[in-house]
Image (tube, rainbow, N blue to C red; front, side):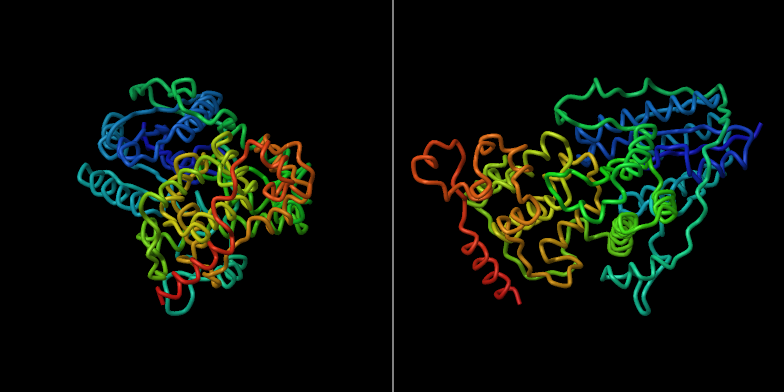
Length: 458
């Protein structure tokens, strides 16, 4: 009996899974394997929210495999050693893996390829599993990646996509390879109270519901903070319980402005991956440096702590930061506002904000998180790097009735609409009775400081 190993990483699903289908076609039996990589934990990336969501995903994947006569094998330790060990135990000729795009992932892939080759085994890496259009498939003349989204999107939209693959009916697994007990959400402490459930089954249910009730209005409602009308598929895309190829194909078949806007967001996700694949250093370094001398010292640290805790005195900023802690997720428009406030109004290094987001976000993703932060901070791919988002003006536009602020900042729930975004304008006695901080900085002061700093960095 010939055997192949399928190494699951950020592709925790059975539907539209090219590595699994290729392994099944090449061998009589397969070992579906997930390794809890100690290097990921050592790097601090296995935060409570993502660890709990991952546990849900693995449990769901195992259940789906068991429905098909198989099971998931889970191991812990050094990924290369564990994969090579399983391949030897199963006498597997091949290991199948989805391509990844960070420096960490590509380095790990190279180590695995060499270790398997030393044992006479092959590593087969499959593209278009965690992205719709793989990095490097579309490039501009004279460069290895697009640095501006609009021309990238134009080419991305013309790229041919592979056909989505059905989930296999049977997954025969050899008896001899043993794994550990599956991790469970209940084993994890320090979670966001309203952390959503993970797993492919949950992700597919969410897609079906959103296609029925939210997709057609997506283009009109996705920036409405109070409506909470975004797809909330980001965590499922991060863990690969949903296929970006399948989502693009389904949205295009559905058609309409809402579907087109969603597809554009999936292109934005791929855009960041092709930047990261070409310039791995941008996970920590400026893509386009502006010579920033970010604020440090006691005052800056106090400002960061107030921002983290949602007590800046700007209601929409505080609402967003409290949502982040409570749900392990934040509305996309709110992500832009909070990032702009930290990096530009407070003039604090974007890496500090990115690290905080990566700790709490269940969809925390190196490419999207770091490069969106850089886009807002003006050190990334934004063609208007010095734009500053005014949180009051943005709140009036995207939360006009104050519903978002009232939901997350209950001490302001009773205020009239005209004061909910500017409580400092309340009459004296009412303002004094309100248990809410004064604005930590005048917006004009922050704007002037940022402009002076950027002028110095030229």
